[in-house]
Length: 298
Image (cartoon, rainbow, N blue to C red; front, side, top):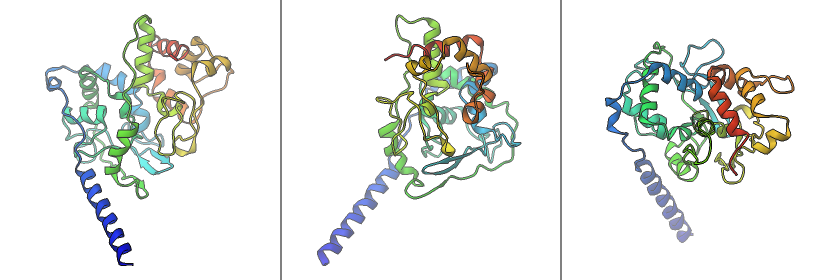
Protein backbone atom coordinates (compact mmCIF):
# COMPACT_ATOMS: atom_id res chain seq x y z
CA UNK A 1 0.00 0.00 0.00
CA UNK A 2 2.83 2.37 0.92
CA UNK A 3 4.55 1.66 -2.39
CA UNK A 4 1.28 2.47 -4.21
CA UNK A 5 0.92 5.75 -2.31
CA UNK A 6 4.51 6.68 -3.06
CA UNK A 7 4.02 5.81 -6.72
CA UNK A 8 0.86 7.91 -6.94
CA UNK A 9 2.62 10.79 -5.23
CA UNK A 10 5.53 10.59 -7.63
CA UNK A 11 3.17 10.65 -10.61
CA UNK A 12 1.30 13.64 -9.18
CA UNK A 13 4.58 15.47 -8.58
CA UNK A 14 5.76 14.70 -12.11
CA UNK A 15 2.49 15.98 -13.54
CA UNK A 16 2.74 19.16 -11.44
CA UNK A 17 6.33 19.75 -12.52
CA UNK A 18 5.45 19.08 -16.13
CA UNK A 19 2.55 21.51 -16.04
CA UNK A 20 4.72 24.15 -14.40
CA UNK A 21 7.31 23.76 -17.14
CA UNK A 22 4.60 23.87 -19.78
CA UNK A 23 3.12 27.03 -18.28
CA UNK A 24 6.51 28.74 -18.38
CA UNK A 25 7.41 27.46 -21.84
CA UNK A 26 7.77 30.60 -23.97
CA UNK A 27 6.03 30.76 -27.32
CA UNK A 28 5.84 33.48 -29.90
CA UNK A 29 8.60 35.40 -31.63
CA UNK A 30 9.23 39.11 -31.90
CA UNK A 31 7.96 40.52 -35.20
CA UNK A 32 10.05 42.43 -37.69
CA UNK A 33 11.30 45.79 -36.52
CA UNK A 34 10.31 47.17 -39.93
CA UNK A 35 6.67 47.42 -38.84
CA UNK A 36 7.19 50.94 -37.53
CA UNK A 37 8.81 52.05 -40.79
CA UNK A 38 5.81 51.17 -42.94
CA UNK A 39 2.80 53.32 -43.73
CA UNK A 40 -0.54 51.57 -43.49
CA UNK A 41 -3.22 51.73 -46.16
CA UNK A 42 -6.58 51.93 -44.35
CA UNK A 43 -8.64 50.91 -47.39
CA UNK A 44 -6.47 47.89 -48.11
CA UNK A 45 -6.53 46.95 -44.43
CA UNK A 46 -10.32 47.17 -44.30
CA UNK A 47 -10.54 44.99 -47.40
CA UNK A 48 -8.22 42.41 -45.86
CA UNK A 49 -10.21 42.47 -42.62
CA UNK A 50 -13.38 41.69 -44.59
CA UNK A 51 -11.67 38.90 -46.50
CA UNK A 52 -10.26 37.44 -43.28
CA UNK A 53 -13.61 37.21 -41.52
CA UNK A 54 -12.84 39.75 -38.79
CA UNK A 55 -16.23 41.47 -39.14
CA UNK A 56 -18.23 38.25 -39.23
CA UNK A 57 -16.57 36.72 -36.17
CA UNK A 58 -16.33 39.81 -34.00
CA UNK A 59 -19.69 41.49 -34.66
CA UNK A 60 -22.78 40.26 -32.85
CA UNK A 61 -25.49 40.05 -35.51
CA UNK A 62 -28.14 40.68 -32.85
CA UNK A 63 -27.60 44.42 -32.63
CA UNK A 64 -23.94 44.47 -31.67
CA UNK A 65 -21.54 47.26 -32.64
CA UNK A 66 -19.00 46.44 -35.36
CA UNK A 67 -16.03 44.49 -33.99
CA UNK A 68 -17.26 44.77 -30.38
CA UNK A 69 -17.25 40.98 -30.05
CA UNK A 70 -19.75 38.86 -28.20
CA UNK A 71 -20.37 36.24 -30.87
CA UNK A 72 -21.00 32.93 -29.10
CA UNK A 73 -19.18 29.86 -30.38
CA UNK A 74 -20.35 26.55 -28.95
CA UNK A 75 -17.71 23.88 -29.48
CA UNK A 76 -17.33 20.26 -28.30
CA UNK A 77 -14.84 21.57 -25.74
CA UNK A 78 -16.86 24.44 -24.29
CA UNK A 79 -18.17 27.86 -25.23
CA UNK A 80 -16.07 30.72 -26.56
CA UNK A 81 -17.02 34.34 -27.12
CA UNK A 82 -15.28 36.51 -29.69
CA UNK A 83 -13.47 39.41 -28.00
CA UNK A 84 -13.82 43.15 -28.42
CA UNK A 85 -11.50 44.41 -31.18
CA UNK A 86 -12.47 48.08 -31.06
CA UNK A 87 -10.09 50.82 -29.94
CA UNK A 88 -11.48 50.85 -26.40
CA UNK A 89 -8.43 50.95 -24.12
CA UNK A 90 -9.92 48.87 -21.33
CA UNK A 91 -11.98 46.26 -23.12
CA UNK A 92 -10.63 46.32 -26.68
CA UNK A 93 -7.22 46.66 -28.30
CA UNK A 94 -6.82 50.40 -27.77
CA UNK A 95 -3.75 49.97 -25.57
CA UNK A 96 -1.98 47.55 -27.92
CA UNK A 97 0.90 48.46 -30.20
CA UNK A 98 1.46 47.22 -33.74
CA UNK A 99 4.01 44.61 -32.62
CA UNK A 100 1.52 43.04 -30.20
CA UNK A 101 -1.08 43.11 -32.95
CA UNK A 102 1.31 41.35 -35.34
CA UNK A 103 2.07 38.58 -32.83
CA UNK A 104 -1.65 38.10 -32.13
CA UNK A 105 -2.64 37.91 -35.79
CA UNK A 106 0.21 35.82 -37.17
CA UNK A 107 1.09 33.70 -34.13
CA UNK A 108 -2.06 33.56 -32.01
CA UNK A 109 -0.36 34.91 -28.89
CA UNK A 110 -1.90 37.58 -26.66
CA UNK A 111 0.08 40.61 -25.37
CA UNK A 112 0.29 38.72 -22.06
CA UNK A 113 2.03 35.84 -23.82
CA UNK A 114 -0.93 33.46 -23.60
CA UNK A 115 -2.00 31.29 -26.56
CA UNK A 116 -5.39 31.99 -28.07
CA UNK A 117 -7.86 29.18 -28.61
CA UNK A 118 -7.70 27.98 -32.22
CA UNK A 119 -11.28 29.10 -32.87
CA UNK A 120 -9.31 32.24 -33.75
CA UNK A 121 -8.05 31.36 -37.22
CA UNK A 122 -4.55 32.78 -36.72
CA UNK A 123 -2.82 29.74 -38.32
CA UNK A 124 -4.14 30.91 -41.69
CA UNK A 125 -2.67 34.40 -41.24
CA UNK A 126 0.89 33.27 -40.52
CA UNK A 127 2.11 34.31 -43.97
CA UNK A 128 0.70 37.84 -43.84
CA UNK A 129 3.47 40.27 -44.73
CA UNK A 130 4.54 43.19 -42.57
CA UNK A 131 2.65 45.43 -44.99
CA UNK A 132 -0.49 43.33 -44.59
CA UNK A 133 -0.21 43.67 -40.81
CA UNK A 134 0.36 47.43 -40.89
CA UNK A 135 -2.57 47.89 -43.27
CA UNK A 136 -4.83 45.87 -40.96
CA UNK A 137 -3.56 47.78 -37.94
CA UNK A 138 -4.29 51.11 -39.62
CA UNK A 139 -7.81 49.99 -40.45
CA UNK A 140 -8.49 48.83 -36.89
CA UNK A 141 -7.36 52.21 -35.58
CA UNK A 142 -10.36 53.80 -37.31
CA UNK A 143 -12.89 51.66 -35.41
CA UNK A 144 -14.71 53.68 -32.72
CA UNK A 145 -14.19 52.41 -29.16
CA UNK A 146 -17.00 50.40 -27.62
CA UNK A 147 -17.16 50.03 -23.84
CA UNK A 148 -18.12 46.36 -23.87
CA UNK A 149 -16.17 43.77 -21.85
CA UNK A 150 -15.13 40.60 -23.60
CA UNK A 151 -16.69 37.49 -22.09
CA UNK A 152 -14.31 34.86 -20.79
CA UNK A 153 -14.42 31.36 -22.30
CA UNK A 154 -16.55 28.76 -20.55
CA UNK A 155 -14.41 25.68 -21.04
CA UNK A 156 -14.42 22.50 -18.99
CA UNK A 157 -11.23 21.02 -17.54
CA UNK A 158 -8.72 20.33 -19.03
CA UNK A 159 -9.63 22.60 -21.96
CA UNK A 160 -9.65 25.63 -19.67
CA UNK A 161 -5.91 25.24 -19.15
CA UNK A 162 -4.41 27.52 -21.77
CA UNK A 163 -0.92 26.17 -21.19
CA UNK A 164 -2.07 22.87 -22.70
CA UNK A 165 -2.74 24.72 -25.94
CA UNK A 166 1.02 24.87 -26.41
CA UNK A 167 1.04 21.10 -26.92
CA UNK A 168 -1.97 21.34 -29.24
CA UNK A 169 -0.17 23.95 -31.32
CA UNK A 170 2.82 21.65 -31.65
CA UNK A 171 0.60 18.90 -33.02
CA UNK A 172 -1.91 20.75 -35.20
CA UNK A 173 -0.66 24.21 -36.10
CA UNK A 174 0.24 24.00 -39.77
CA UNK A 175 1.82 26.68 -41.91
CA UNK A 176 -0.63 27.89 -44.57
CA UNK A 177 0.20 26.80 -48.11
CA UNK A 178 -0.07 30.24 -49.66
CA UNK A 179 3.19 30.40 -51.59
CA UNK A 180 2.87 30.80 -55.40
CA UNK A 181 3.12 27.70 -57.56
CA UNK A 182 5.30 27.96 -60.64
CA UNK A 183 3.45 27.36 -63.89
CA UNK A 184 0.08 28.49 -62.53
CA UNK A 185 -1.63 31.72 -63.53
CA UNK A 186 -1.49 34.87 -61.45
CA UNK A 187 -5.21 34.49 -60.78
CA UNK A 188 -4.81 30.89 -59.58
CA UNK A 189 -2.00 31.90 -57.23
CA UNK A 190 -4.03 34.84 -55.94
CA UNK A 191 -6.88 32.43 -55.31
CA UNK A 192 -4.49 30.11 -53.48
CA UNK A 193 -3.35 32.97 -51.23
CA UNK A 194 -6.94 33.85 -50.40
CA UNK A 195 -8.38 30.34 -49.99
CA UNK A 196 -5.45 28.85 -48.09
CA UNK A 197 -4.76 32.01 -46.12
CA UNK A 198 -6.94 35.05 -45.57
CA UNK A 199 -10.39 33.55 -46.18
CA UNK A 200 -9.37 30.36 -44.29
CA UNK A 201 -11.81 28.08 -46.13
CA UNK A 202 -10.16 24.99 -44.65
CA UNK A 203 -11.06 26.09 -41.12
CA UNK A 204 -14.65 24.99 -41.69
CA UNK A 205 -14.40 22.67 -44.68
CA UNK A 206 -11.69 20.29 -43.46
CA UNK A 207 -12.43 17.22 -41.34
CA UNK A 208 -11.14 17.39 -37.76
CA UNK A 209 -10.09 14.74 -35.27
CA UNK A 210 -11.37 14.33 -31.70
CA UNK A 211 -8.98 17.01 -30.45
CA UNK A 212 -10.11 19.50 -33.06
CA UNK A 213 -7.01 19.20 -35.23
CA UNK A 214 -7.47 19.53 -38.98
CA UNK A 215 -6.76 16.39 -41.01
CA UNK A 216 -4.96 18.29 -43.73
CA UNK A 217 -3.08 15.25 -45.04
CA UNK A 218 -6.09 12.97 -45.47
CA UNK A 219 -9.29 15.04 -45.46
CA UNK A 220 -8.49 18.59 -46.49
CA UNK A 221 -11.60 20.29 -47.91
CA UNK A 222 -13.51 17.03 -47.33
CA UNK A 223 -16.12 18.73 -45.14
CA UNK A 224 -16.63 18.81 -41.39
CA UNK A 225 -19.33 18.14 -38.82
CA UNK A 226 -17.51 19.95 -36.01
CA UNK A 227 -18.54 23.53 -36.68
CA UNK A 228 -19.42 25.70 -33.66
CA UNK A 229 -23.00 25.14 -32.65
CA UNK A 230 -23.07 21.67 -34.16
CA UNK A 231 -23.17 22.86 -37.75
CA UNK A 232 -21.76 21.06 -40.76
CA UNK A 233 -19.72 22.21 -43.72
CA UNK A 234 -19.86 20.31 -47.03
CA UNK A 235 -16.81 19.11 -48.92
CA UNK A 236 -15.40 21.66 -51.35
CA UNK A 237 -12.68 19.62 -53.01
CA UNK A 238 -12.57 20.02 -56.78
CA UNK A 239 -14.07 16.63 -57.64
CA UNK A 240 -17.02 17.01 -55.28
CA UNK A 241 -17.76 20.54 -56.47
CA UNK A 242 -17.76 19.37 -60.10
CA UNK A 243 -19.96 16.36 -59.30
CA UNK A 244 -22.48 18.66 -57.63
CA UNK A 245 -22.77 20.96 -60.63
CA UNK A 246 -20.41 23.74 -59.67
CA UNK A 247 -18.04 25.50 -62.03
CA UNK A 248 -15.80 28.54 -61.59
CA UNK A 249 -18.50 30.95 -62.74
CA UNK A 250 -21.26 29.68 -60.45
CA UNK A 251 -18.85 29.44 -57.52
CA UNK A 252 -17.69 33.04 -57.90
CA UNK A 253 -21.31 34.16 -58.21
CA UNK A 254 -22.28 32.25 -55.06
CA UNK A 255 -19.43 33.80 -53.08
CA UNK A 256 -20.71 37.21 -54.11
CA UNK A 257 -24.46 36.68 -53.74
CA UNK A 258 -24.97 33.58 -51.58
CA UNK A 259 -27.03 31.96 -54.35
CA UNK A 260 -26.15 28.40 -55.40
CA UNK A 261 -26.49 26.89 -58.92
CA UNK A 262 -29.79 25.28 -57.85
CA UNK A 263 -31.23 28.66 -56.88
CA UNK A 264 -30.98 27.93 -53.17
CA UNK A 265 -29.25 30.32 -50.79
CA UNK A 266 -26.41 29.76 -48.35
CA UNK A 267 -27.55 29.66 -44.76
CA UNK A 268 -26.08 29.74 -41.29
CA UNK A 269 -22.31 30.14 -41.12
CA UNK A 270 -21.73 30.30 -44.88
CA UNK A 271 -24.48 32.87 -45.21
CA UNK A 272 -22.60 35.04 -42.71
CA UNK A 273 -19.35 34.52 -44.60
CA UNK A 274 -20.97 36.04 -47.68
CA UNK A 275 -22.92 38.71 -45.77
CA UNK A 276 -19.95 40.08 -43.84
CA UNK A 277 -17.05 39.05 -46.05
CA UNK A 278 -16.94 37.68 -49.56
CA UNK A 279 -19.66 39.90 -51.04
CA UNK A 280 -17.25 42.80 -50.53
CA UNK A 281 -14.41 41.18 -52.46
CA UNK A 282 -13.57 42.32 -55.97
CA UNK A 283 -14.83 40.34 -58.93
CA UNK A 284 -11.22 39.50 -59.78
CA UNK A 285 -10.59 38.05 -56.31
CA UNK A 286 -13.83 36.06 -56.36
CA UNK A 287 -12.91 34.68 -59.77
CA UNK A 288 -9.44 33.83 -58.47
CA UNK A 289 -10.84 31.92 -55.49
CA UNK A 290 -13.19 30.02 -57.76
CA UNK A 291 -10.42 29.20 -60.23
CA UNK A 292 -8.29 27.81 -57.44
CA UNK A 293 -11.07 25.76 -55.82
CA UNK A 294 -12.02 24.23 -59.17
CA UNK A 295 -8.38 23.25 -59.77
CA UNK A 296 -7.06 22.25 -56.34
CA UNK A 297 -3.64 20.61 -56.29
CA UNK A 298 -3.64 16.91 -55.51
